[in-house]
Length: 334
Image (cartoon, rainbow, N blue to C red; front, side, top):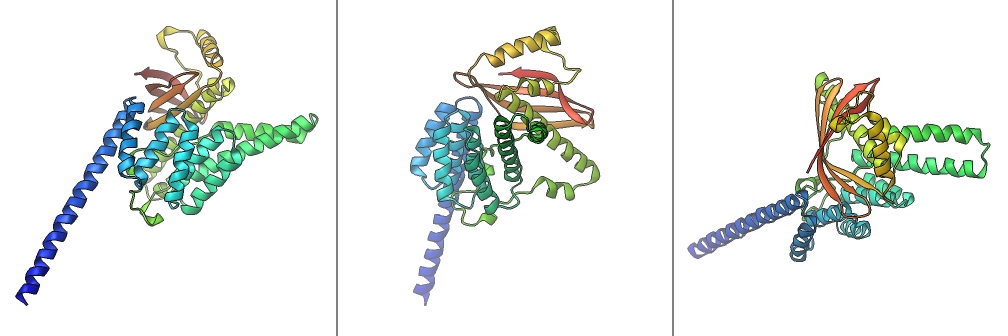
């Protein structure tokens, strides 16, 4: 009996050591991924991807690392490679909705709207409360409808009904476009041993609003409006939609260095029209609402135009006029 107790105690001690080592390893891996993420945020994306590849070679079933790689590749404009990585993540971890969402964003950017729609529908199927996928799916439907009305007008230029519908859908899409890429921070994605979709728990904006006091609800509403306005501005810039781009700036907008509004607009037109293609993406958006009519939006901006991406930190001073948020001041720093 004493021998049995001694053996049992030895076994328990050994299990404790193994568990301790396992926990230490998990923390070390998490720290390594955070270090890699910080490298990318500091503009060292290529070096971060190299380090991440080495990490993935030793942790091939780590969903977190694979997801980070997909986002980094997308931010570098390496869309085909990013699509391949996110597809791999969906096959290995079919219960995670974020990879499907990001696939949809990349497909939409390539004009493959039907693929984008299917990816978002799968994301929603895995997580019915995933608000980002629902919002992006609405944008995809709007774009598909817009293209259908465009086609109807090309076939019959006298089709006034299609013209009216086209104007309506483009206005709706223009004021609320927000095709969002899920974040790459390690705590945003489930760990590699995720086995159930319940492990990825998220609150939708409506759930947060319903549990918040009245003042908090107003702040949440303002943040959603500001996020939509800023994303619409970035999308208009990316698509060279100059009318929508300039409409994002309020009547009280003050260009930098004392430049007149007219001179600033002419300069912006030239710079936006010159490249054959522009890609503007935003991340780490932080919104500070001062009151019901004034706010500050700070974010990391990645700008790519016929060359390597340029990373800057930008702050927009926003003012609400006539029920809509407009840019009043725009400040950028490296």
